[in-house]
Image (cartoon, rainbow, N blue to C red; front, side, top):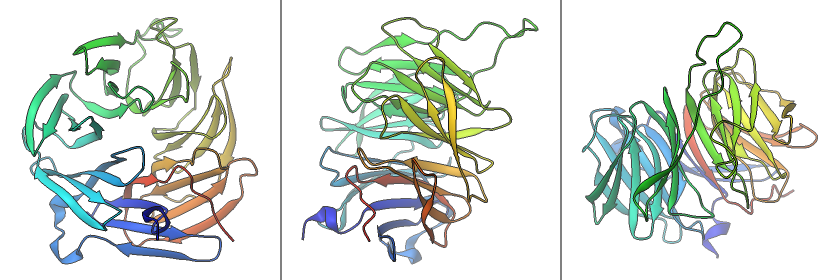
Length: 322
């Protein structure tokens, strides 16, 4: 059996659980991959990502502010292939990715470490209060960072320099500075554009080829946005909030909030969409995994996974079968 047929997605939890999930319209199989006996309060999964284009390896950043580690799960052989301590800089791991033979970690203090064979080979210093680090999978030597008063920045790992730093929007109508809090970042498909969402309730679209200020700025009132995903519709993203609100956002000018997806109780912590199929998969603190149809807004599947969920990776060719 092809390893991609084993699980459709992997989820991580606040308690440190790491599960594989196989799901269709009628049933769901969720398997604890990590031995529950070995999990302690220091094992909270704070970030996850695919480690390769084939979606074979899952990169996992976990741990509290005191004791953090990186694990690599090989889904082809159903085993952890790598595990090492990551206590070189303070703060939780907020982003993880792979660049050539390096594993990249970004922690809240703003330090980005490049690891090889469990050793930190290189450190990139960025602003403090880092809350998101994402890699451009279409140009993998580019990573983006952002956070609380940590403006969106693009770093070129090959040239070892910052290639873009956002300029904040103009002051508001009271001539007050608009605060920055980037909570998640996404690179639009086949484009130079980058989308961000904020704990302060705005969605912004940047085009570094055009200007430093956002080309689109959309306010979603009274929502602390926590996560975003690139939708399988051109120039659209899906955002989720700490209040359990999930919206489809059209990033074509002038920018517009479209569908609202219902059924949430707690905060949404991670959203993912397959590359071409019309699904939105989300997890949250209410312990449920949900699948919505992006067009009809219908809730297609809802599964209780017993743990408060913090992160997820979804296979890009996922289809919800009958």
